[in-house]
Figure 1 (cartoon, rainbow, N blue to C red):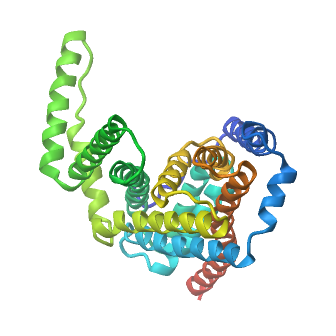
Figure 2: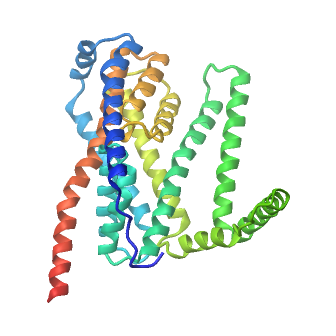
Length: 353
């Protein structure tokens, strides 16, 4: 990739397809929230709204404040992926990208173009932007995987009324998840380990192509080049790149526990609540609705009810928490857009001068 490259414009057919998918995504979210949730949990919107009216406004403000803290921590990790880009430019870019991701159907794809445009104006090369974006995406996904591993481990060790075979299954699941995550981190950290694995895969693919008359291609060199490029262009350590989004999700999980326990008065074990929050992070990876809204709420509300929460209160609790974590980055991104435009205009005037 050279520095003059830019994202390829969408064709008319691609734009139409994405528009239809966006409309379908919004419609699905509306169906899940308006129609499915009340019926699946045997409640009504009258009871749902009534359960929310008793919540202190201070708890709502606290949720919004936590969402801002989570965004700030996440921006630090995002900034560490791009060498030569200031924290301010990275924070603005991350805020806008997250706003688009959570507010617009298929926003994660659109946000890639916005990241490229904003960081390009900040002086980053196309190679740095590409490798940094890849690194940030991998770190975010790994952080979302590490949380369920932690939650499952805590549940297995908790003094709860859980059958022995369930505890053993939880420990095995956590161990497998941790092993897979550690392997992925090891491959990313050790060039020797990654080269050894790729060379073995290359041997298998070469034998396959030789047996079936295909043409073998080198997979070792491009993969190692991509790995080295991402690490070389990172501004911070790998611990910071992975640690920042992980800490951000843990802070968000603790806020969920406080919201359920003190805001709604649910008498549910904090370990179970953290497990439910980890479930919500996995559901957020399902790209069906903007920000996972609807999908997350159905899963979280159902899990809360299974743990003894009242049906209507479980729904309003899940909806309020999800909305606070979606609206806050959306608002922060909306505020960052005019700042970015102003900076771009200032840069243009400076170049003309």
